[in-house]
Length: 487
Image (cartoon, rainbow, N blue to C red; front, side):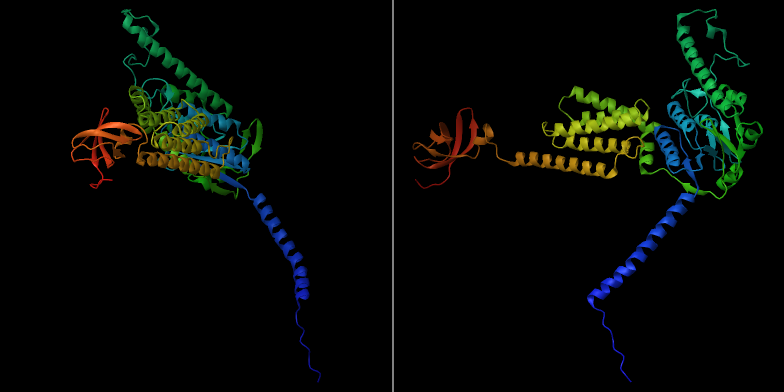
């Protein structure tokens, strides 16, 4: 038999085989990517946001960014799972305005059992496209109260009845200036009552407008504002205050399937069956801002800011009180809604840059540099992930590291300068060596620093001998011989 020859794979043949396999492999990879992209495009989802705290600037920022995320991801519905005792009027109105302008339906869902949508939460519930609650929850107590008591903002607790109300709840005649006393001391009370009425009527008009927009019970909404009434989930459903009662999110989505909502003037039929629920919990940035906007923390920041500025003005050049005070004051303005989030962040960034530049000219020994780093980082965190600015996190980290490195370098240079021997003035002469111009046992003349000085000594000195300066008193030196031998 003829032996079978073994064919060896040469270099060119391996290359040709690889080329033949390359195109089918690339085609398979491309088709796989296409199928994955198509599957992701067909995947429908519901975005779930969770709020279990007072409504403040940080909460408003989290909810608004969550709604915009739902719009970008083309979510079928955004569910706001709410449990709040109330909050700030300005933050509440920002949230509702974002809901009303959103291109995605927003369902506010009071959950879990035992949760509440009190005060500002009631307004948010009325301002949502869909209002839902779980059993054993409640809403109401929407009377405006001022921070610290009195009328003013939708707060966390309803106002208490003042002494001017009678047993039937009617206002005293003195409120309209019809009292018999007519004493000047009554006018501030009447002014406060007028302000309370203005705020109350504004709140009533606002919540009635929200109720009429979605066909909900406007009369009960008004009673919740004027009288601080509350309702449980079942009663709220029966009185047309909410749209659904559901035990959990899955049951809520099942009830929403086929429900019609009006979004930006257009009627939309929801298709919520088999939706994938994507939970968007508050990130570390939102949690940090929530800590800053805590009323207790905000109050402390305000006090630190005020007293820091006062101490700096009382002791110019102290630097540290002014640095801490200015940063704390801006953070307090943001926490109290005096400054919007973007303005506060930009102010902190500019303040940090000013501190960094001042560090190079003012001998603060790192106080301004460290303060600038803190201010810049805090401001950048506020602006990071902002939907309008979209500042990149790597840029923030890079600039913060650069500022920290520059501050450390400047601080190191100052420390090096402190270690160096002075080259002018009194300190320069100490330890300097010179030459005796004559023999003397107590007082004589020496040549030091290219100058002729009168010097005192405790040991005999000979002409031409090296001497060292021990002290200086006016134009008179105290010296000692460096060596005993005559030069």
